[in-house]
Each structure stands twice: as C-alpha cells, then as structure tokens.
Amino acid sequence: MIIICLVLASLLILSFLVYASYSIQSGIYLRSFCRKRTTEKIVALTFDDGPDPIQTPKVLRILQEYQTTACFFCIGHKIKGNEMLLQQMIAEGHMIGNHSYSHSGLFPLYSLSKMKKDLQTCQCELERVTSQPMTLFRPPFGVTNPTIAKAVRQLGYTSIGWNIRSLDTQQPASDKILDRIRKGLKPGSIILLHDRMPGSELLVKQILDVLKEQGYTVVRLDKLLA
View: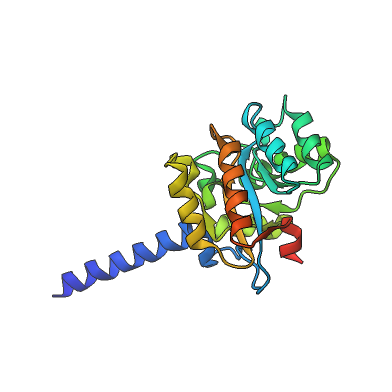
C-alpha cells in the first residue's frame, strides 16, 4: 500500500510539472498574457516561427486585403535575408515580437546566461532591422520553466501566450482548425498561428471570414494589452 501511494504521488507530481511547463496558460512559472478579460468581441491574431520568404508575404497580402493587423513572433536566425519582410510588417502596421534566436528544442534547458544571450541576440537583430523596441516575447514551443521566467524578468520582456491554439503545424484539415477556433472563441482571445506553414494564407482568409461571421473584430495585440 505504501509503495502504491508513493507511485501515485510521484505520478501526480510529474503530471503537475508537465502541466506547469507545457501549459503557458497555467502561469505557474511565468505569468503570460493569454487573453484580455473583456466583454467586447475583439480578438488578436499572432503568428510564430517566421519570417518565411515564401509564406509570410502571402499571409501579409491577405491581412492587407482584409485591412487587418497581427503580431509576428520572429525567430532570430531567420532574419538575415528577410529584412525587407520585417520592414514591410512594420510599414503595414503589424507588431513584431521575440521568439528566440535559435528556437532550439533544447532552449528550455539552456543556462540562464546562454538563454539571455540567445534572446538578446534576437532582440538586437530585430531592433536593428525594424528600428522598433522589442519587448514582447513568446517562449519557443510555449514551454516555460524557472530559468525562462528569470530571463524574462531580467530582460524586462512581456510574455505573450494564447487561449486558442490552432494546431495548424499538425496540418489537420482546415475545417477542423476552424471548428477548434469557433469553440475556443471568447471576447479578448489571442489566436496562435504559424506563417511558415504551406497554405497558411488560405487558412488566414478562412479564419478572418469566420471571425466576421461570429461578430468579432480583429485588433492589434497592443489594444488587448492596454
């Protein structure tokens, strides 16, 4: 009986640690802004993992067609060669955030000094290209832990999460993504998408149509943050 209790306790602890690290909405290690508490039917679109030289321009064209703005969380090592895309984002009224320089699967395991260097390298590159201060940050893979939390505090970043994860990187049928978004929609929602995915511009167009049908207005992320 004692052994069973110890095993159950260990499993509960492990489950808690996994939840704390992999659920950005939990706020256990790092408080992230995941949704605005409001009754106003407004939402924000966010894109991770760009800039992509093929897909990002297509997404920007759709956003411009719908006169809609978004926030793009960019990976530092993808900046070189795509500087004009970042400048286009700024010129068209979009926001840009730090999504780490390396976006390595080992990022959560970095030492504090290595993690801060990674984030500061991305910040410097983004600021060099855009001439805009970079204070918004989204953890790679949405993973948080005490080291990430400490780095964010020391660098003065605002961590941005989401309350609707589209799962577009798993490439399900678009109707499944749209149904997932419909079910998760609440006033003040933040929707997570990826501008690097094939067909991302078609998905964005469908999402914008769904939001309009549901009576929602897309606003810039800073309006939710205000």
